[in-house]
Length: 272
Image (cartoon, rainbow, N blue to C red; front, top):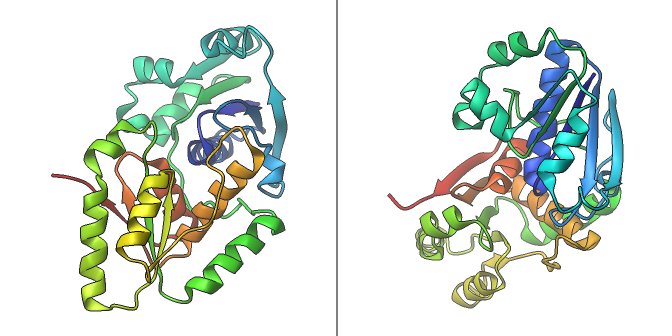
């Protein structure tokens, strides 16, 4: 049995599940996902996606004190039930987890001797096709996406500007780069429409003021503690995935997840 506990925000959790699916298949093990509700995501998985075949989901887990406040303590306590337990720090220390993942064969050989495995992380840890084909959004979510994309029409371009607590995205992918890129595209085709996904109200206002006829965004609640805030984030991700091309922020798993869902080109705007 392979128990995987995805951590951090929505995009991080999706790539962790994706790694878990690939590893469980390689190890020929039953995959169990423990979906914890916390300040990163306070929304059940089954409010966002349909059930995934072959996967056991422990949905909507709420940790109590002291585990709610001390992530490391929760990991150590839970580890007592398993033959081997790995989190991001342990994987990096023991297995030279370069670029947040290691080769499939290395991890497969390392874990193949264990029967009960527990992995808790917010990073990809096993190579996979990254097409996310088994994530089927709920009809409520897809209705919102379809309505938004109908307004955008065909051949729209996706823009993802990551801000708030992501220091790398703020430093290396300033808003000025996105404005320059949009201007250059509009010089070639002035009618181009852009779907903007951002966690910055200021950037949303700025781009709409700068390009009033070309920038569109989904109205949303920027609150991870609110269920509708997470649903709106998934709507954003899915709308981005339907763009013919995505311009994303450096060090953002959200941009990557949108690209994985469709296979469409992702270009990271980054200062040299």
